[in-house]
Image 1 (cartoon, one colour):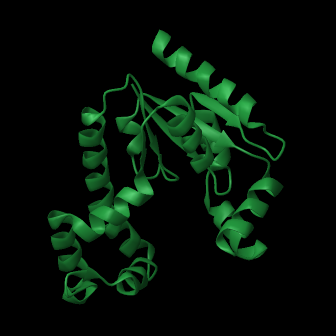
Image 2 (cartoon, rainbow, N blue to C red):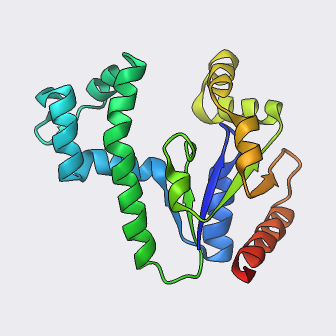
Length: 195
């Protein structure tokens, strides 16, 4: 069984993933880390990005992050072109990774689970939720961003829509206690494996 983990900025997706991995021995595939690795290492991805952006995207074999960022953020169309190369590669990489795991359940953490189409490769979706103020404060502290920057990012996300789509919701507010979060996760895992 494949469990997708998603949620808005500052909701605590990575914390929930770490509980799954460290406390419940559920392997978790981090899409963000995988995308960065594939952009740097995967021959096909490198070839397609070079054709799209130009040879200067890699210098002496190394990704030029600023070149990719400049291209990505220049327009919505550019972002879609890059995503059309990277997202399918991440999806394939996840499926290969999942086959190598020996547990009954594996998880995929992705902030953009629905936007990327990754929900098509998971059986169930767990949405990590937290109150708006908690999310803003967490993101400001974590990224060193201003309140306005965090609010702008939050406004671009479709939290309400994704809450409705999710199979499970876990509340990870400021008062959330690790033991109660673990219990909620255990209940979700038991429900998944019982089906």
